[in-house]
Length: 214
Length: 129
Image 1: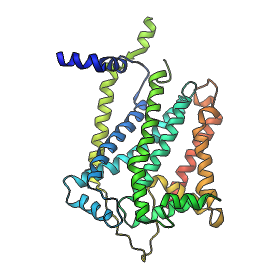
Image 2: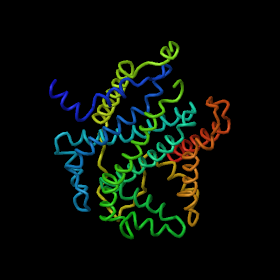
Image 3: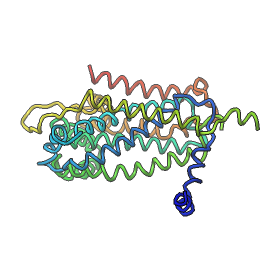
Image 4: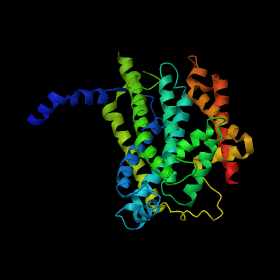
């Protein structure tokens, strides 16, 4: 306990813990309010399985497909990890939609929670970005052609389209450079922006509480 | 003060327990799905083979939408309409302002919101046919 007191003196974690644990919650709350929390749980599953998958996966034109085969066949628990990452991602999209529907129907995004909805909308966009970039990583036939179609769609923007598409692909066509770029987006850039918007999303809720009865 | 207290409960222990249960069920569901339906690997990339691409299910509506805008109009289906839909979504709390929270008294918001949802669901179903 001495050690705990010592650490608490310097880090003050009981205060932080009190703020969360003693926080009042309106009594009307029901299971429809769970979707956001489930989404966050799935996000954590995705972070953990993603960290472990990145140990085996090789983001290069010659190696990507082989490393996925190794994950499926040889790596211990590799197939289960891929499965968990795949299913958590799919369930996350479903849970986000349910979460947004609940908030929309309850009108919970109204003053003073408008910016929380805005942060959530960006989180939806980031999730779709994760889905789009992650789909390419196995570097198989369906991944390749889906990315060709997807980047062509971005290329259809008048004037800036050509630039945007080649910027995203790292060249004129979908190739090894695209794979590396998508990997970078998937594991570095998108998580960074997601961390910011998640912080904002939770910060507003901590500040003003859940809508209704507070 | 009494009434206030009756309406509110503390996060601990009432909700911490329920949230923990929900989180455990979520992880369990993911593991069960992963064990029963492991993800397959597609064929190796083959540039000479004929292949019609199929995106993830949550992008199917977008894929279907672009089919209605061929050639130089691709931009409308691929970027303009989805962009407009996302703008409406992003600005929802500012468009649907006012204090009223019950949905049947927010008719414009209800029609727009469920209209958007119906459009996305129908496009997804159309792409599966």
